[in-house]
Every structure is written in C-alpha cells, then in structure tokens.
Length: 161
Image (cartoon, rainbow, N blue to C red; front, side, top):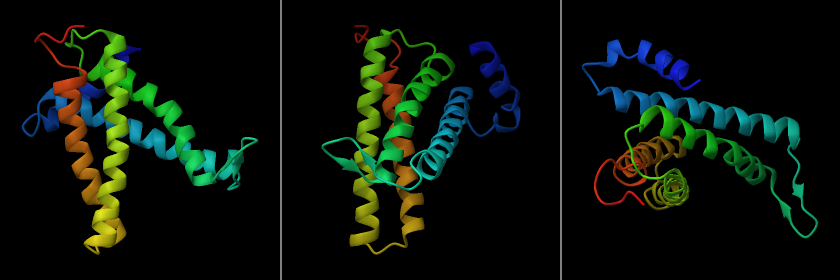
C-alpha cells in the first residue's frame, strides 16, 4: 500500500518540480488528502450519524458539531500519522511511539492555534470569517510542516529515543 500511494503521489509531482521539493509535495498531497477525508467524515457524521443531534453520553451531552469534530479526529489523526510516517518523512530515525506522541502534540497545538487565530482575526481584527479561516489555515499549515519536519519526524541528531 505504501508503494502504491507513493507512486500515485510521485506521478503527479513533475509539474511541481520547479516550485517545491518532492518531500514538500508529498506533505501537501497527504495533508490535502487527509483534510478532504476530515471534511467528508465530519459532514457524514454530523448529518447522517448524529443527524444534527447532540451526542448523549449519560452524564454529559456533546453538541453535534463538536461531537462530529471529535469523531472525525479519531480517524484522521491515525491516518495523518501513518501517511506522514510512511509516505512523507520516511528518513526519520525517531522511534514510532515517540513520533506518534509528538504528532499528537503538534495536532493539539494546531487545534489551539486554529482557535486562537480565528478568534483573533474575527473578533479583534474584524476580518470576514472566511478570510480569517484562510489566514489561519496558512499559518497552521506552515507551523505544522515545520514542526513535523524538525520535531516529530526529525532526521539525524541526538533525538533517536
């Protein structure tokens, strides 16, 4: 499966060769695919599984938009990690469990950054929400790429725990 996914992604790389390195293209392709999966899962979960109703867990009830978000994360975090580990950052010598822990840390920081920047741009700087989301997404993508490259899936160095 790894070879098939890599071959498909690499097939589409030549037109982008002058613009970005192969690893960056693989990151964009895997990340973009995972975002599409996330949005699809969110839509299906919110509309058809939860049917726009709160998820009642006995003691608490979770609003449907939050429950759908959490349910889609339960799938896209492992998928994103596996794509990153086996397609994008294959040269990393950091152990898998350390990579997974670091990956989840970066995802949690990404969630906080999304929340912070959306609030900043919309509520304090009075950006139109869609423009705020685009700006926020650009910031989070750059942060995530650099974090995954230099922290989660670091190559070389003394962090080979």
